[in-house]
Length: 521
Image 1 (cartoon, helix red, strand yellow):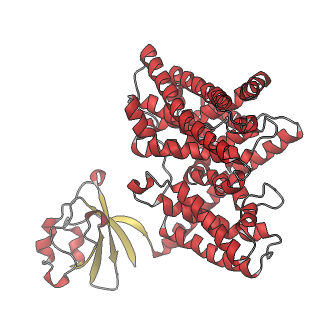
Image 2 (tube, helix red, strand yellow):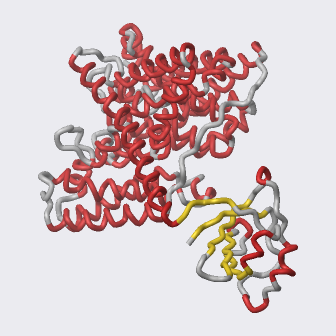
Image 3 (cartoon, one colour):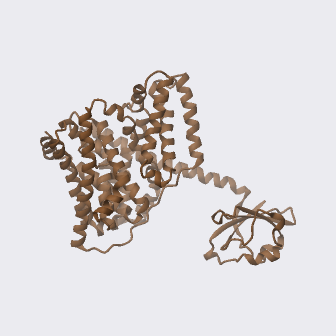
């Protein structure tokens, strides 16, 4: 059996499904127009059975909504201009296709493994040296510096390095919201000791502080834009991760059912309850994210995928707590143990946060020309917005009488989780779980309302919109804005990384930390 591919530029003008009514091939051939190879648009495939005097042509045109057409022609019709053959391999070529998939999987495993291993090694080295500066941030600077040096000396080497790590960066982008979820899943445990009055004050700071941060970052960017008057240029195209498939959903569903049953009948089958519960809690989290990502856009405006994701994990925890009679608190405790020797599902997901920071280096390098051209707008806005976010939170917390330790815990509310946790580690006695939860809630507010708020504020410039979004609502806001305004995505990505970087840098200065503690009370 040989295979050929061909192309047509126009759909057939007759109905396909009723075979007896199909016109004769000679009458039909004029309905198709062959095009030069350079202008081919829609692929079709032909399967030629060499053992038969005739061959079957199977046209697949899903974009036209016609379904598929099977039609019989004489073998000599191949040269009548109806189709243009193009070799697409043979049946013997199928193993090659499978081999390419294996190569892609190995490429992803190696590139992602290097990023993860680098993050772990740096973290251990910083702990051993008693260095409090975020190790992942140092790794990001190192990767970015290496790329910049290679770009100056051997540009092809920099491009090759970027291409090698592209599968890892796409994987991180695809699952990025999942790495925020664990803190939201265990939120009931994190806020248990927070008084109701303090909780209301924190909510006020989250909402009011986010709105103020949007305005400050956006208007700063507009002001600097007017001063420098730099002309806009197109940004480098950003590769988008592939959407989730039904096969992936069913695969995770199978993992959930089988591992839930195992945990029910053998609670310590994998050594500890946390390890035994890990597979089904992880599967529940991923399934929730996949389902949430597939919801209609109107629904996602008020029900963000990350909320669906957290609810899915919590429902699974409640269900297992009931059937096993261990209680939901115990299951949530197993979800995020914060122990490297006995990790839960949340620990696995949050283990990627350092890799997220390192991956920023590749995004920033790809947009290096844009950063250089609009450096004045980007850096001035990010610096002012980051400092404003930290100090305004401390000031508002002091004014409304929020406990100092809670105020310090929510200082990095506008900074991505990975770096927010690094920032609060500079301070003593903070509630890191509350920090992560507040960061996620801030991102959810931004994801749902940032576009409408910026429209009301008159922030119409893509640079101002991108910087204002990322500086106030980090990754979740960035994802929401870039889905509808791709022209703002490069500025979102840059500000997203730089906001956390600058926040970490200024908080690593002892004088800054002391001033924040003093203001908070």
